[in-house]
Length: 589
Image: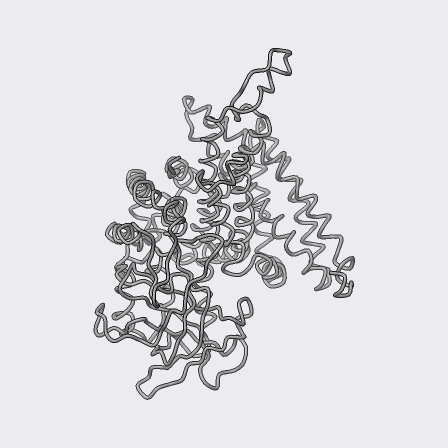
């Protein structure tokens, strides 16, 4: 079953739910008309469907191969990457001032979904022009930008983010990679990094590594970490290869999923590098990028869920299995039926759609908040967007990755035994999406960051402001959609009660309840998106499209009646505290 990019659904969200055409005063939005949006998204969809998607299963089967220090990507990847660069999809979100397309993040996120839905492994190589532009936004590195950033944006060179080391992952303060100053202003780096996506491959002639390391004599912990640019080949002059640097690929990881994405172990031996920004400020610089990569986790979760759903929906409409439940209820002779006729199969499909639609809206809405925060001149709008980004980035990264993985598992379930077989293709989504719950900061860490650092900042102002917006959107529902208001109001009561309890809880109890609170906030956020979607559908869908609106209302009702009530269970878990397991001795586990 071929992947189809959800162009019409994305257009509906951009034009009628998010109203992107109203942001013409922001940089990059002046050309976001209905016609241009459709042209951009349709072109991206064709690339994803025709070029990238056909490589997904073959690439997974062939996988990357490590050969004498080099990595060979699966057949077809080099040609697809070349077309990605020729079409400019690798630099969609890069500022036009730097040579990119200058598209708003909210549009680039949609393109990102299409490419990830077509082939998550391939998409891992695609965005380093954008990421590099964020990391190299520092003073005093004009020559580095000319020599390295330009080819990164052009896509002729690619990049990596080198943080993790064999002895430390989450605890970045334990980094040992050392940087020694040189008389010419450069540094010599020595150390080993692991789990480096795209650390070595044959798609580009050069790879530029952005490395966290510790300058000799720097303070211990995260306070002494700096950011360095360390290329595989030094630049002889702008965009041209010079001599080979002291960066060696020691091998690639053989992973559960993403087998066509090269995950490498890199060793830096007197590798020449250059400091980016101020010394000992590397972690803060890297977190500018991390916020975008965590938002991208939500995009990828939606993309994989959509692709898995498409396979499952097609399969159950074709597979004859079992007996028609309705016929049996009526006393009629039982007849063979499609899987789609089974109530439990329909329940699973509805559960998937009830998640995917608001999740897609949420990742696009959050991308729009990033646009507003970075491009608006109105301080109040920027501050409001900043609060939303701070509060809900853990939701995109962690809650959507949890639910996205579960969606892939449920889609696999609809295939029965065939879902466990590689040839059907659905099991790959389960394997590929699993990494999102671990990468870019494990989901439990995201929950702790939310509750212990962000939630109560400024007396919880950002949280309270968001809750007011959600409450108002629910109250604005017309009478025939009162079920939306009622369901959201009940869950908001649960959410506020959990917030108040955590505010007065001990650190141990708050930590123990953090994951449940994060998930609860995620459910309410998805419910909020449903209210925005249904409100927009009522205004813009014509009489001829009445069934389309009715289907959306049915999916929203399913969410409100079957998924959102879980907030009550999460509240009970949170308020039970941690003492029932925290005080147990180690040998109890």
